[in-house]
Image (cartoon, rainbow, N blue to C red; front, top):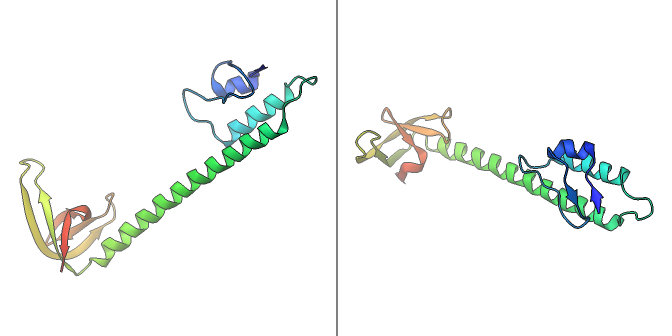
Length: 145
């Protein structure tokens, strides 16, 4: 059994006893790259010299962490690309005639708005369109002429 050291405990917020096969997780927040390396170094410094850890376990943990980091980065990239695609699609509607279904927030009544897109408002998320002077969410567009 290995004990989480004071340095590692500071990362986790409390001292926990762990076996070599169990994962250390934080209940208050997820561990980042720096936290992972702090735990790895603390574990290496405090291992029993008579029973050293198997290096394949460390390599396995590092590979899993790298894979997780790459997945997170890929997700962020996809999110950014999706935002750019929505902006491009909104801009492509400038000058086009569209039909949208708009719901009145006070009465709950839905109406169809048909008109020419004169502006794209990028300050809202997602961008909204101005159709004949009325703000229309791009998600409510049902037809493009």
